[in-house]
Length: 443
Image: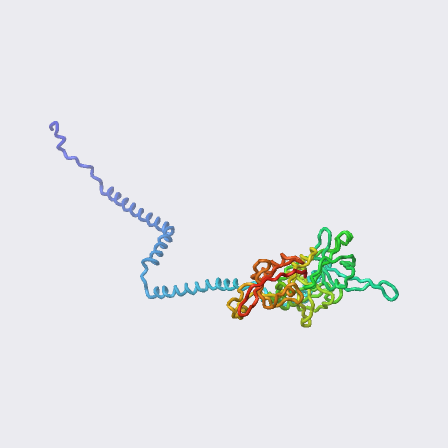
């Protein structure tokens, strides 16, 4: 063999035996089988963890995107909006009901509930006790005002006579106590004395009188009253009579039973506004209350505030009496409490309305001012020559277009002052202006 002969030789691998080959294939088949079993087990174990996810996603996709529309589905689709509409209507009904309930006035709700409530004897006792306490609390401000005239009898003995009326303490200053009463007690021109709560009697003097409205203010010097009595008596709170309405409960105190220190309960029977009175308007109120007006009675509300007094029962029906609301007289009471008389012109007038202007055909009839219905006989306006039917347009160059303007101008006047009143008076088919000098008086 030559040097390179070994390159020419064939290299033959070692031949495996058939047994070894068989074992190899068996191992491969077993491995494949084992892998398949493990794969199946793993899939079976992990399937629950992912089935919900894939199922939901599949359901959502089918339900909203790919689910074919069948007749049954169409039927459900058609009926679903109807169901939603009915549900929506049911949901929106309560707000409508609530809105309706909110628009009902609270007064009507309260009134309906009161009507439904069945009162018992205990309710009556509580109400009666409350009203009794209100009436009793007013006693400390109530007085009896007496006018005492000393005469001599046939035997030469001094005899006192006179009249009396109820009074109420309306103010207390550092030096005096002011008491509102009727002017009738002062007509005897005798000595004045005041009986306070507890029967203590003190001398008094007249501060001022308003004869037109029949009221007066008397004063008791605080220096004459003992310290003990000064601690007991008190002034009454002033209420707003303009707030009184028909049906409101009121109390009459003073002498409604004809004796001092009595009280009773009633109610406001009627209310009318802008009633014409001398030199102004007022709120006319009639009370359903049984009283004896002879000695005078004051009206308080359920809060214990003074809201007025009962005037003369002349012309009133039996069991009904007119209330003079204190709010209409506060300016006058304040004026006479300061020792001066309230200015008085004596005119009953009303504001011009379309009913008045349309009823008078004259083209130059005043469109602004107060139509004078009447002048009180012997009043300053009457004596100056002002007549019924004149139209008041100015007082001291201040234009008068309403009753509020008139009352404002009136408050600026003082007794014995000369005031220029400008009126429009009918002259033939038209109206012409005229000035009158009026000497202002006190009421």
